[in-house]
Each structure stands twice: as structure tokens, then as C-alpha cells.
Length: 418
Ligand code: ADP
Ligand code: ASP
Ligand code: MG
Image (cartoon, rainbow, N blue to C red; front, side):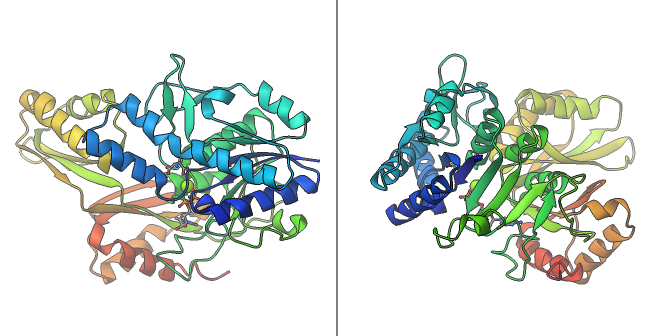
């Protein structure tokens, strides 16, 4: 008998019928003798709807109150799913994040989980209950409701699995695993049977939204066995078959796993970034700090950074931030930084996208970058920024070429082939 945490995403609980199917699936795993904690997201589209409502009242919603509103979607699904389980004759109990409690820091809309009190869940599980815990939400030390950032139910599930020392965390979604790239963009994309944490971490941080990045970080840190699989298959699929389905995210040194030997595992992309350029900055020590220090102080994440070679004592510095933070970052630069460093101009470009190749095999293969650049050049796609690490190469390009670029790279590196 195993303890399994099963997370169901928005599409998977998107209608009453789908919630019933989730209940059937959970009941099947219970009948096979396993203890189950279920973590549902809000119904598809619901979190967007709630955030839009808040913005109608306040264009820049108060962060504390926005979390109060945004967290309600999950409260609905835990209740409905528990009812569906009870209807099937199971013992089930729902918990909001604060009932558990999922303790977080106070960074509204991107809170981090710091601890989980799990005694009550353990007690219920021992009594044979299915514990249905709301994803995406927690509570800070002052008792304020927090949310974990978009896609945060993945992190809730993995954190619960880590706290409860679960045997596996299963992420049920609307695709049957992790693919070489988003199958919505490249229909020929291929499902990976296994992927390492390192690669998954890069893919998630570079924009593959199939798993929230913090979920992957958590799973890697606490060695949670993590599987991505489909909730849209027949809910009565035999447990033995479902247990092997989808994509297992695992460790490079895991002896039981046969790693796929491809050099490149996937193409990730992100449309959520914006590029900011500070033009004609004096080329002297301390300038990067003068520009990026206030950005960091405002808790704005900076991603790709490029500083041009200086000319006539001047240089340009460009960097990317999350698109949602672009206006705030520009304001800080114009009001707090420009008067001091006396740069010529601060400009922003929201019509960019970042595209990345990810693969452990890059460590031992040369020529990947040049093949990537050649492929993009042949399509007339201009590269605005480049950044690399041991296992990834990212480029920033004009957003309008993104889908084309993903397709030609997927093809050039033959990712559709086994
Ligand atoms: P959920 O609501 O279940 O959390 P998400 O929409 O967050 O689902 O994540 C699943 C989606 O992630 C898929 O529908 C797919 O379009 C997208 N996706 C992006 N990159 C990948 C990838 N490499 N492999 C699989 N799915 C991906
Ligand atoms: N409902 C939240 C969102 O839409 C959390 C999640 O789905 O994981 O972002
Ligand atoms: Mg998700």
C-alpha cells in the first residue's frame, strides 16, 4: 500500500462530469489499497475570471485582497470533488490551504511554501479518508491568505508529497506527459518516457508550463517521485497500467531508469517576458548594479541580461523581465535610475519571446548552438539576445516568429524521432 498525492489541473476538473471522472479515478486507486491525497486546481478559466473581476474594481488590485479573491476557485473544486467521492461511497474530506495549514511567506501572488502542518491529514488518511486539499493557496504567519503564483497547484501537490513522504506525486493534466515541446504548437512533438529533474527544471523555467518551476525544484530537492499523466483517459484504466503511464521525472543516477539518449530533450518557449533597454549608459564600474539593484529591490526577477561592448565611453544594457512587471520596472528606471546615471533613454519591448533548446547531452556535444543559429538564420529570424548554460541555449526573438522558430528547430534537431 502506497501513499500517493494526485493533482488534477483546471481542465481535469473543468466540468461536473470531469469532476465525477476524477472521483472515479481516485476511487479506483483507493480500491487498489492506496492512501490518496487529492489536490485539485480551480475549474478551467476560473482563476482568470476571478483576476479579471478584481481588475474591474481596481486595475492594479490590492495584492492581499487579490489573493483572497483568486484563491476561491480551488475552494469550490475541493468541495465538489469531496461530494463526488462521498457519492461513490468513499470517505472524503476537503481542506483549504489554511485549514491544513500550508504555511507560506507573505509575497502575495507568488508566495513560497515554508512548512506544512500535516498531522490532521495523516490522521484522516489513517482513518481511511481521501484528503482533498486545495492547491495554489496558503496562509502567512500573520494569517493572511496567499497564493503561490499561476500554476501553483503543482507546487502544492509536490510540497504535500514531500511533507507526507508520499511514494509518488502524480500530476494529472490534459496531455499524457511531458513532450519534446508544447504539442499545441508542434503536433509532431513526442512524449518523453522519462526526463531528468535538471532538464525538467530548465524546461519549466524556460516556459514549458506543463509543470510549475517551483514544483520541479521542490521535487528535486526532496526527492519526490514525480509523474505527469493524462486525466482524460478512461478513468477505469487498470491501476497497474496507469502507474506506468505518462512521463516520469527522475534523477540522472536513478539505476532503475533507462534514460533516453537524445542530445536535445526539448524546445521550451516563453511569451511572458519583455525586454528593457537602457541606452547610452556611461561604461564604468557600478553601472549594472545601479540599474539592476533597484529592480531587484522591487522583487522583480531579471532573466536574460546583455551588455553591449562599449563605444566612446558609452554602452547599452538590455535585460528581460516578466511582462507583467515591465511597466513597474520601466517606472523605477525612469524615476529612480535615469536621473542618476544620466543614460539617454529607457525603452521597453513587450513583443518578444524567448526560445530555448534543453538537453543534458549538450554537455558532451559541440555544434548545437551553431546549428540552432543557422536554422533560425535560414528562416530570416533575427536573434536579439543569447544566453547559455551547460544544458541549455536560449535566444530572444521577435514574438511574431516564435511558432515558426519552434517548429523549424524541432524539425532540425529531429525531436519527433525516437
Ligand atoms: P493544468 O491545468 O493541468 O495544470 P497546464 O495548462 O498548466 O495544465 O499544463 C498542461 C499544458 O502544458 C498542455 O496542455 C500543453 O499545451 C502545455 N505544455 C507546454 N509545454 C509542454 C511540454 N513540453 N509537454 C507537454 N505539455 C506542454
Ligand atoms: N488555479 C491556479 C491557476 O490557474 C493554480 C493552478 O491551476 O495550478 O493558476
Ligand atoms: Mg498547470
